[in-house]
Length: 333
Ligand code: GYE
Image 1 (cartoon, protein in one colour):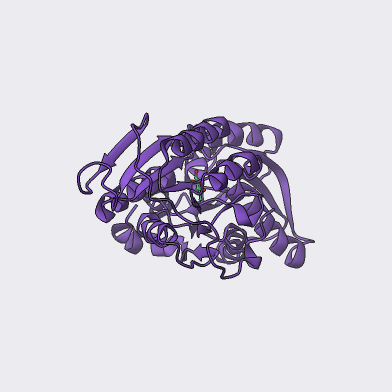
Image 2: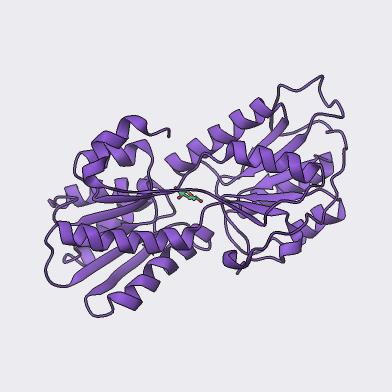
């Protein structure tokens, strides 16, 4: 696994080409000079899909920042399938785009296509999620520290339990993100790290399964959890959408979300904040999807052959339920 902590500032080893873009098969948009002018950067971007509110906000941010920067954007939606991302990247290489950016659906299986991009001298920028590949195959990662988000989720659960005056065993259900995706692996890892260190005796993850980062997945898996383990008293969901789906399952089972089952989620999208202001979510660990402007900045730098940091991290906060009403009007996604 790519060890995010070991990222060092390093020179971008890949020279950018100033090739013109051929006809694109995917969505394309541009506000740049006449189409394909040599000073207009053509960016090929392969998005994970449209599985969550976070993802929609991220897509909007990337599209509007590309427009703002005057780049020609070839945008491709992989519908949560790695094979679609691989073919999108191959098509960007064939079109000779200037820079490729993508948010990898899972961490493994990228070496071959990344080597093809390198052979074609097209720099690759990872955004949002990381990969388990040789670090020389991409220029940088623009995104969050998911392991730390997992740790923050455990620390905020400590506060939530205290606030609720919880006594006795903490029986946790975990709704994991997409299997093999960096945020699913790392959010589970960071949470477990704190749990093993400080709560080995009183906390236990009694059930854990993927809900694929979707509302439908969260609802379905949570309703199965409630049948197999009716004594669950905490839910840790790797994103708001799965938490929102789970809330429906909890209510359908005649229980009160936020009271009978304390709920911690990650992301901080508007719908998550609405549920939190209604008392149904107890705390949210923020993960900021508005990566577009930083991404465009980095794209310009790698295109110019400039040095960039290996990991450009996102700043984030945590929110308890009593902050939800005040924070809601200020949420940008
Ligand atoms: O938390 C989730 C989305 O990769 C950080 O993907 C992203 C995650 C986000 O589906 O809602």
